[in-house]
Length: 386
Image 1 (tube, helix red, strand yellow):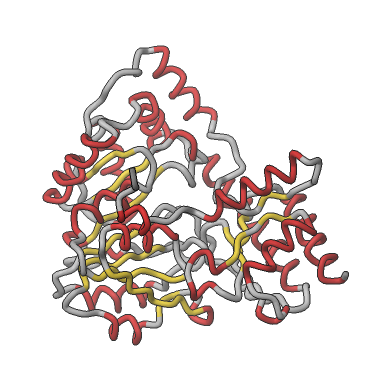
Image 2 (cartoon, helix red, strand yellow):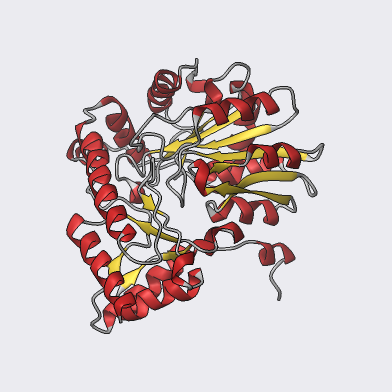
């Protein structure tokens, strides 16, 4: 037996491969500082965890509606309406296990072989992987460091074509931590408003920002009907293992996503959905404290990297990543990431693992303790001193 040809066109996430290698070194007794995984190091807030436990005790352990419980969809609709300044109802919401299904399902529903998908590069690897898996044509747009890792708008316009079917935006962004300026979002909307295209707006880090709040393209005139908003609970509520995400989209696409959901997962776990209601409607103090701590870490860690010869670390405006330019060291990205893991005990990712335009950069997650981040800076500095 052979695997289907399409399996040759689907990739994996490098972060999990590096994590395995780092764990193997730890098993040998090595001290490793983990800055490779994009996962908050905070516990799920207590009131959310308690809601999940109570839900299990109360019997929320059976199948639920494929689209998600109406109470949770109503809470999500109210939250999105308030934060994006648009009118969203529960009928526009699909609840899914994690954020990735809102990449996978809409793309599966929309992309035909030969359709072009514009996406950020460096960017979340699943964008390109899914495009190729579906037989679409990936059209990467480089993120420009001196624009705060936003698109080169001239190039963006040039690469739009009659075959463009989907535009993927991600702001705040993984891996760069960049936030697309509001004026750039408005310019992109002006280019797309009268085109027959859809936009997948990956807003999973929408509440983790340090300067101006990111602007959702869905909030602009006539753009909501063309936009799929991806968001969820993993990052802002430190609920990565709960697997709870959602998409907000036009109703005609909701129907397609529900078909794919029922054919794959049936539904999202009922007790996690009860915890999601508690997350959105309960106190937000823990989320705000976490973002404030990420800001403190960002400032200290980026300053530390900027003190290492050959490093130039832009200050990220959102998410919890640092994406330093390392071209001044003379190293390529992957060899340096490998060397830092093996010789310095610092696990990070090559910028090139997020696309060809990521060459010359490294990605560090600042979702680790302040002390560990400062120790990582010391280890990197000692590595170059040697």
